Length: 469
Image (cartoon, rainbow, N blue to C red; front, side, top):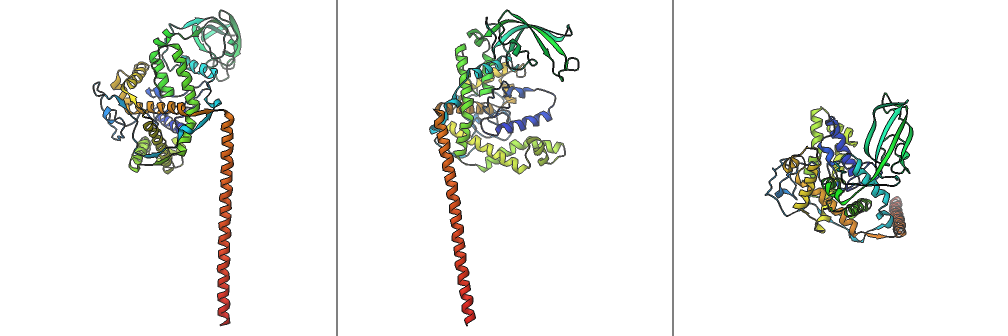
């Protein structure tokens, strides 16, 4: 499941950009992976947009004095520790936006509900996805029975026809149950097993697993050593990983000190994901946006720049590139799509302005330092990070996240049946309006028909009079 972003269809544009980059740079994972927003454990977290969304690599000037302004020059100002501002706002798209009263909007209780299974799966992903450098030194090792989404420490050895094989043995391995990291049946086979117990799992490798092992029967002997549990010390040890995780998946920052705070922030993030995307979509649909045509033109030009360059480099038409990488039929269709994305940004930052949402320099630095720490050496310092990810993009990401969180706080959570009743009433009203429109149309047709008949009658009378003469 791909993440979307903060508006409908923006996930499609993210996919377009990612497909384009993959074909341009097929060598493998680059620092772009730092902006990857995919949760693959059945929980799709969609916050601020990647690539063309509120943030990511942009050509916006990274200097502080340009934060909150559009700049298409493509120049990045060098980072200066002394050249900072107290608070920063989102990019100004120069649009005039009339917002609806979103505080009167409602969502059902089931939509806002955070299920324990969602929380456990999210923590599983954080622990075992491989995107985050986790220090498990101070995790609590508890005893118990293995349940879905537990992160268990195991020893295992696999044998095919009684013989061990390369890569089939490990000790002290942390495995998240229910994430599908191992072949079918491995993780399910550990459900209900108690710590300290050893079990044999009789499984079969998938046909396409490898040339040597594909389709073969295998026996894994597995010992469950303990079940991992977070502690306050673990949270402190992994502050940068948690900061990166929260920004990457929720576009937010929180100075977390304890494991209880960690769980609460995770729960809030899930609730925001459940509530905010559709809520924002409804707000956008009900908003009136008067575009700044000059800024819109610059916006479209910036987003198409890589496609234009690729077309020129490969002797292709721009329509061919857009069709191949974006799945859209023409440049005109792509322009229309980008114009709609512009509207989404305009609405997002109009809400931010109305709610006085800003990002402090301390928040910005905390997030960036967390990402630098987790980058595996790709970035040496703030300056090198900003060369790849200009400051305005990161600020915009965080602004979008705060808007989502604010919308989740102000929306009215009501019983589901109230939402269903409202929806039924709206459908009935829409149907009645359609009937009225149809009746009005029929009346007009009748009036026109009567008028035509009268005109024809007058014409006939005139002709009759002429004949008499």
